[in-house]
Length: 114
Image (tube, rainbow, N blue to C red):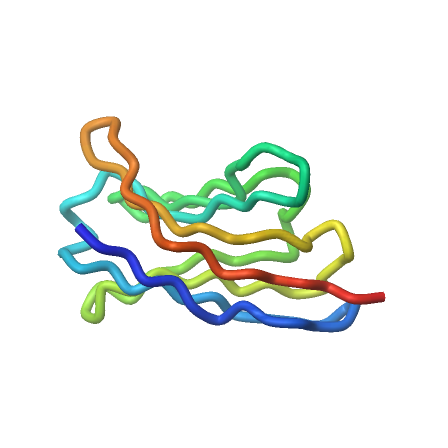
């Protein structure tokens, strides 16, 4: 299983970005897919996920600003990020979970400048 994340970059406070993650398999073969992030000096933490049934889950810090979605035909996961804040600066990792095991993408850096 391979995951390829893209879409990170430098954005100003209040701006938007859309991250993409191409999955080398049928998204429905995974229990859940989504995104984690790791800020400098901090542990990797869950940002958002979507399960096989389409139910989404967000960490409180990003609710109402971020939206996770998936393209089933293309096996791509998206994370739309609006109203970005400096504290959103991190490396964002996509993941796909199958039977309790997480497969990871390589990470894409998001930098929010003030």
